[in-house]
Image (cartoon, rainbow, N blue to C red; front, top):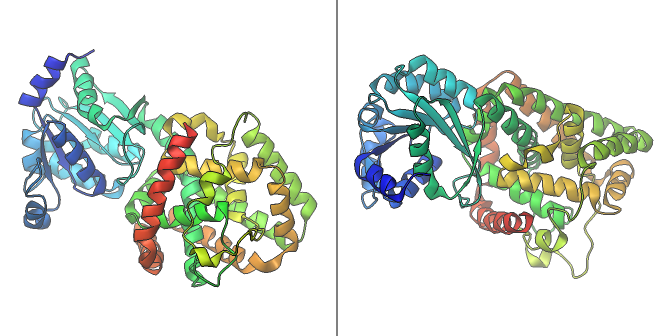
Amino acid sequence: MVSAEQIEEWKATKTIGIIGLGDMGLLYATKFSEAGWKVVCCDKEENYESLKAQHAGCRFQILLNGHLVSRVSDYVIYSVEAENIDKIVSIYGPSTKLNAIVGGQTSCKTPEINAFERHLPSDIEIITVHSLHGPRVNSEGQPLVIIEHRCTKKESLEFVEAVVSCLKSKKVYLSYEEHDKITADTQAVTHAAFLSMGSAWAKIKVYPWTLGTDKWYGSLENVKMNISLRIYSNKWHVYAGLAITNPSAHNQILQYAASATELFSLFLRHDEKQLTERLMRAKEFVFQDHTGDLLLDDKVLDKYSLAPKENIAEGKKPVPNSHLSLLAIVDSWYQLGINPYDHMICSTPLFRVFLGVSEYLFLKPGLLEQTIKAAIHDESFRKDDLEFTISTREWSSIVTFANFDLYRRRFEEVQEFFKPMFPEANKIGNEMLKTIASHSH
């Protein structure tokens, strides 16, 4: 246990450097500096003057570039896009202060660790981190992965732990390989689901919560809309980095597209027997060990609707939906042999919601059977399910070809369509995640 005196001495003598002032870099710079650490930061050189003006009243200092940050910092955190990590570490890594510690914040650690090993001097310790939540989520109680990759001194790890303690997160210690496998298991399929959902709505030019559209309301629809919009209101590279740079994610996104396609073809063939058997096998595999309450319940889910109140008649029941996006999540986990409950220790708030809505659909008495009936006999969602299936295949192709440019273009097209709703969706989404987080502990 490090003494309070030691931490105060470190705060007086050590400097934390952050290269990259995107949303998460800014969150770290703010939290660390408010906790009393000396923090220096930089972003692209062309942003220097505007960032200095923008953060003039802040406790952290803006420097011109990563060379200046690296040469004075005792712990440097690269908070940059996964696709750019190698290039940026190759430029600034050689300027790292003698015997310093270096880490990063990318969601995929294999390319990050490779870049550090390739470009950092051999005297540098490598202790990297990943906060498993977005910049608008309170870091308290959320998982924070710490990866002690190259560490010769016990004090180095103690120092990093002291720095990040102000986040009040739950520390989880993993290797970078374990981290990448778990983040793929918990995030790849579920991001693919909600990216595809947003794409499908944008393609058919439907805002699903608007007056006159009565297909999408009720518990599960509230969550699907909120999460899809929440993803599209973030930066594209957050999701592209995880999907494209993490080899474990590729198979999972391909499987998600395959599951959606195969289930949809059973809808079209009206093959209720085969659909039921397949989904019951998936249910048995994924939820076999489930006991106790569901992560989510109607009271929690019904509160957070984007639809105007007048859109929903008093006492009106939700239209039965095929819920292809959620069926395909659980089917994917089954086909890949993933037990999502194994990874709860590293679960993001979004993952807990994904798991919660899947659990709700499969375990709430009668709901799965009602969904199967709707999928086979009710054609009112056929067009939507077709667009959704096409979207899953498009996203899996983009990831397979590792095309960042196409990923960005597709993401930003959908983002543009939904932009008018982001302020309200994020407000409601933040409330929902906060309630669900406290409800599911």
